[in-house]
Image 1 (cartoon, rainbow, N blue to C red):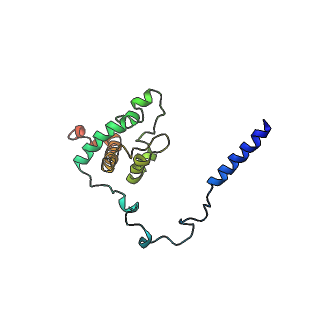
Image 2 (spheres, rainbow, N blue to C red):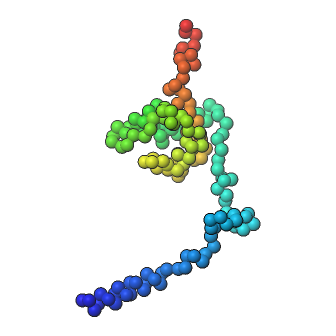
Image 3 (tube, one colour):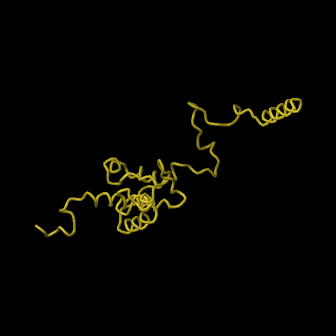
Length: 163
């Protein structure tokens, strides 16, 4: 049996070595090397920075779209009011943070957008499910939702005109 084992191990070892390539000799951007300029960039390459969408102007239509998308994609975990006690959580999944705590309110809109796009912690990425414009609409709605839970009584529609 050992007569067969030695040639097999030798063959496997040679097969592995034959698959190795000299990874040191290849075109790549190295640390502290000059940045590759636009002249060296292929014509069909899309710049990541130029493709980043920016927050649209806040409108009632944007908030309505954000509300609709939030209720479809976010409410199952974050709940309809954003307290982190959605139906999925009630069924045993880990609770996300409340959207109404100080840490979440301190996030800039781009951070919320990036969280929807890339995921964070247990939350998976929604980049393939939610269009960039809809992600911004959700961010706008989340900000409105946060404000609604912390609005002073004088700003509430029902409280206006009441002494």
